[in-house]
Length: 56
Image (cartoon, rainbow, N blue to C red; front, side):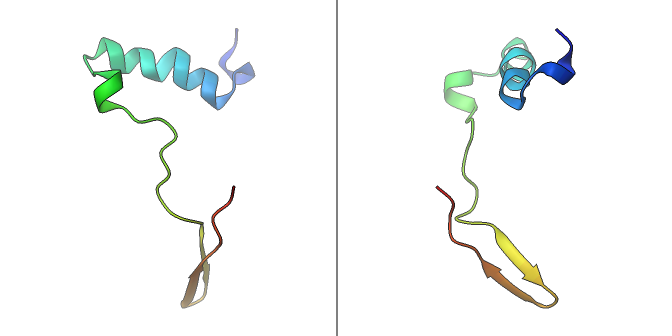
């Protein structure tokens, strides 16, 4: 299957996670998938900024 037909999740599972395992990473102890970094996106307008409400 051509990689353009794969979803982001498919590519992560089939290529990235496999490469991390082969490099010796402990998937259960060293890797976090879909980790939320911020509580809502940051909106910037000129010199002003605000944080939007968290989605979902």
